[in-house]
Image (tube, rainbow, N blue to C red; front, side):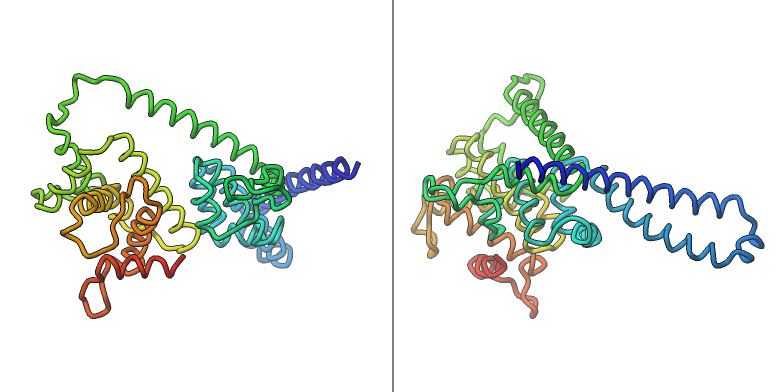
Length: 334
């Protein structure tokens, strides 16, 4: 009975908010029509009415604008950015729907919808809002309380419908992408050497940088990548990139540079780690297989975060930070 009463109350609240949004639109339209159909003299003579309606229209327009951001989002990443980086939108949510703890839970839920792992969506956020501590741990982790996650999305009118729609689109795009990737294409001029395939993935050409002549390091790292299963390499790279972008969005709150938007930094560091793992005599650092070692994977992400927050890995005196220093800097932000 209590659950039914709660559900009815929530539906009434949502109906009231939708009606308020319609009222806000009417206020904005009314002010627009007043200005459009009145002469300057009429507006001056009715200054009090004009100023009062203008103030209401400004406030109503602000609310409608923020809600439109949710309606017009075209991806789960955009939705996550609204709740994590758009401070006007977050204020709108705080003033009308829920607090910061719930906002964090919404971001975690959207992250899961976007295909993120528990490490990406909860541990990296250092949140625990969605963990169900009333149930026993499974594999050392508490299960996710999906009822709580769905209820969180229900707190904001239209959010669950929008999130589920974008989740379906996301899943359909992945299926299409996987199908196209696995189809033979004899028309493409693929490199005959597997290591050559990785050269183009290491030169940042995917974000518009000019492809330079391959360096010795680039050749060594591309050869190290070529010795591994290409599907495992691609899966790891995608995971590193998604986790990095998620952390930059949800915790660091800093725009990602052009180089950071490339896939090359991930391919480069994975290739580098593989090379030194197979050639330990050439490195003094702690080594591990990036395909299986979680610590190495996190250090790659930490290093890239360190590179971003130091604006390209530069010290105040102009010198460059070492890879180890960048990883330590990135770790301090997490």
